[in-house]
Length: 119
Image (cartoon, rainbow, N blue to C red):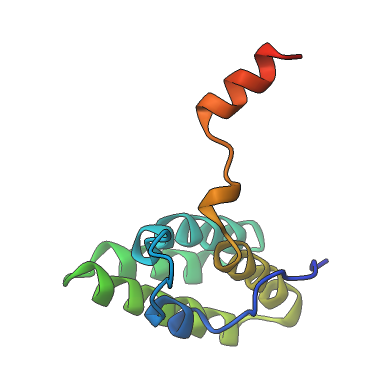
């Protein structure tokens, strides 16, 4: 099951190349969680070989953070092209979650502590 994406969903390689106009999102920094989500979902769906290949690719990357992020994004896009539709849609959900992320909407530890204190 997919959800309605609040972002203008793009291929990950296109998204990661775009500069954040407000300078709030470090796109190379965001690739780590996406790789973990992909890896875990691939394993859960019986795509162990693809998950292992993704891990090897990510582990062996060299270069500056923008180059590494672009290579990872290209690999994620390639993976989506190689899997069946239900899994592809699930992986797109992950892309959507990361592309729609707004750090201003994130709950900080301090915010959470305040909320718990007031309940």
